[in-house]
Amino acid sequence: MTSAYGDWLKQQRETAGLTQQQLADMAVMTRSHIAHIEAGRRIPSKEDARRLDTALNTGDVLSSFLPAEDVAVADYFEAARQLEQQAAMVREFALSFVPGILQTRAYARAVLSTAFPRVSEEECDRLVVTRLERARILDDPMTPVVWALLDEAVLRRVIESPEVMAEQLRHIVQLVESKRVRVHVLPLALGFHPLLESMLSLMWFEDQPPVAYSEGVGMGKLHDSPSMVSQLQARYDQALSDALPLKDSLALLRATAEDYSHHD
Image 1 (cartoon, one colour):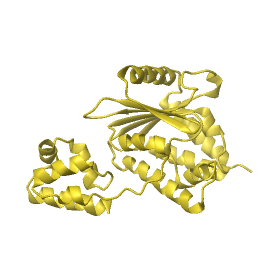
Image 2 (cartoon, one colour):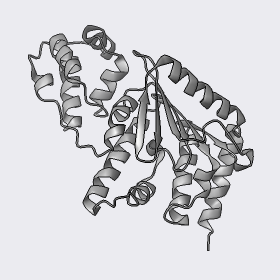
Image 3 (spheres, one colour):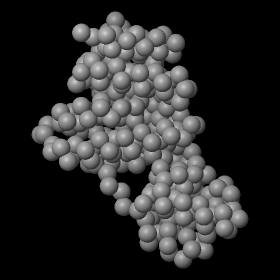
Image 4 (cartoon, one colour):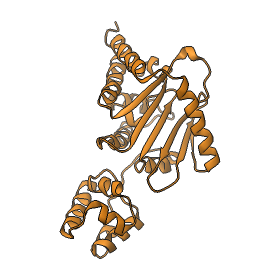
């Protein structure tokens, strides 16, 4: 449904003889947002859809037939999930698990199936689909720019099995080698670092101020206060300065994946 909606929008735009940038200017949106909607990666807000209808003279078609989102995420993460889909840059810090947008299907299922209270197989399937859908932001080769800062514990903690871990780490290696993402590892030998308290996601946008999202056990918080966002960005930068360089991080990821693949 999302893909059909995007295809129809593209058809109407081209029929009107407009480029994505021209439509974006008329609808007071960004070109990248238009591109993501046309590619089926995002669903516009009701207000965005109304402005698109006005710009394209399509009555109320785009605002009346918005696709329904079948997503399964914790309530406290929903606002952050929507912002993640709109971000121009995302910087992740992971303390325990691989960041959601970098997870493989097998790794995601292993993580989500251990939820407490336990969830049904059907619910677990929905959670996995939503997590993999989030990763579609990486389908665009340029936007968003993604950096991931991983505590070495993420690599060392065996989730499900060595085979699952080997596949997961090789997936990250491939993303780094293709230059789609940048990954740095904070070595365990470092000891303390300023992000040990929880996971953190920093997001920047083309048309709104940056935000941060932090998460602990059973809770998450979206931060939009400029002073707090700035403080969390500074913490991230400090931790990043202590991390292994990209080349060394990639070598560690490769070696760890190889160790898992030969695990007896």
